[in-house]
Image 1 (cartoon, rainbow, N blue to C red):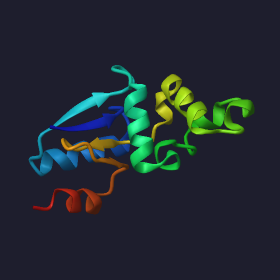
Image 2: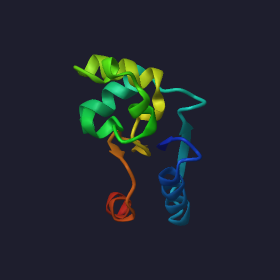
Image 3: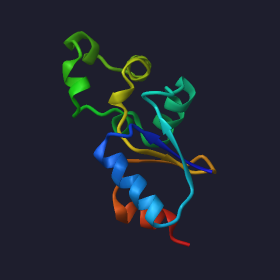
Length: 116
């Protein structure tokens, strides 16, 4: 089963959900604002995609963090921040049944992923 992680009111997440539904692709939606996210999942995503891909440094949550939290950011500190402020996770995060992770949404990227 494919899992799409995100926040329902995020425009990019909405676009991804609409695309998956239009293509008839079954997926499970995981609202990480309501359902949370595990440290294990974050570590897996970072291992696969890299911290710079997983961490959204462009959002308001990141910009509102105290400078001390943003300085000297290593993986451990980033994971702690992402667990506390999961809206800093770039979205959507699509996890395939086999475990592969894809972050962000572009129709052409999803088309390539689901081409059979």
